[in-house]
Length: 564
Image (cartoon, rainbow, N blue to C red; front, side, top):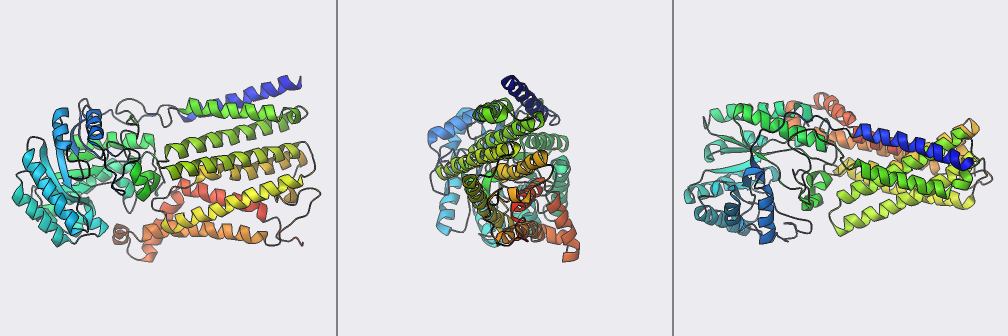
């Protein structure tokens, strides 16, 4: 009878979880299908895992050829950012695949490197006029502050004298507005419009309108200097994963919505465009974190991130993660079967629900971190943090089981829980410091702290159900029934976590207040602060992280008035 009762409620928990996952991952409307035919242009950087321009490990010729074949049926043109670094054979291979090129030269702060890039661009453009239809000298070098505008113009003029193709320079749209003399120097104006990265981030629902507005604004600005000069949207796209910025939320469905909407606007108004980018770029995670590595239409494995037609799934692989979480629940039920046999129905359901929640969090953590790990060190961290969460989940289930069975405290388990939480809190401080002061490219580590935070709430739920109240001694880990190992300084941990929350809000708001375009739109602290706080407090990822920090502090308020 007890076994059949456990099985019945296991099936109930699994059904509820399965129904939730099914409803959460229904196909979504991502806007109008992309019209039949190919995209106009895709940014092309054939860097696979283990290859990086930062480490000067460049793609092989066979990689370039294979990737060109992958994109040949998706686009008419590719845009490259360099003429060296393994990309030398690209024009010949693009010809074989029936592709045209917008070829670039990577310009930076080093004169010798610039000289090699410019010479290679000129040579390639002159040798392959049937493939290389336009050239771009430099990419966001003004934004990075690596070159002054006059030196850049010198390179542009040199290339214009040496090649027959139209010549341009590519940068975010505001750089052209800041340096209007560029309008007269280029044959076509290449601007990057990335609503996610704007100083005032744009939601995906308003991104297409923003794109149209910026193009018109640049056209109006250029009209007085170079009327009628064509405009190329050199980069526009949306990340499929990473940190939220204000109203801009990364995601697979949102990337599909933006790309489809952008193409509709471009076709409707005759804009020329290049989508960033063909493939997710693992090497960018070193500079720009998870968000920087996930702008591709195709994954690192060269699989489509989303379709250009039809409905889109945020997580089409949810049945796999659900199945793995269910197996973990069955394992937990088997390990605790003797303890569960005597529990009343309400307590049994709570324990099984907590076990399934922990299992789902654990599988989600491992899946997300492994997908967004691109190096040995990142994967090693994934393994370590997953094992740490597994151990903590097991300890929490053991403690929850004891509470629900009205058992006395366990000295050894108390020390394990305290040590585990102190380690997680130390990591939380480290993560929050980075997010508060250097958080532009850092993701909120919500998945890594879901089990620690939910574990505390689970302990509270178990106490309430078992005793009708929350026992402050049971919640403080080290002062279980029969033990008194209280720490007088524990409230300092709680106070510090609250200060970390304030630092997080302050750092996020200051990141907006420091933006050049933000300052121009909202001059003065009194005008800018309310807007910055609105963007900050709209961020659901940030609010979830603050919730984790507050929850982690709860056990350490319990010692505030207690003497040793």
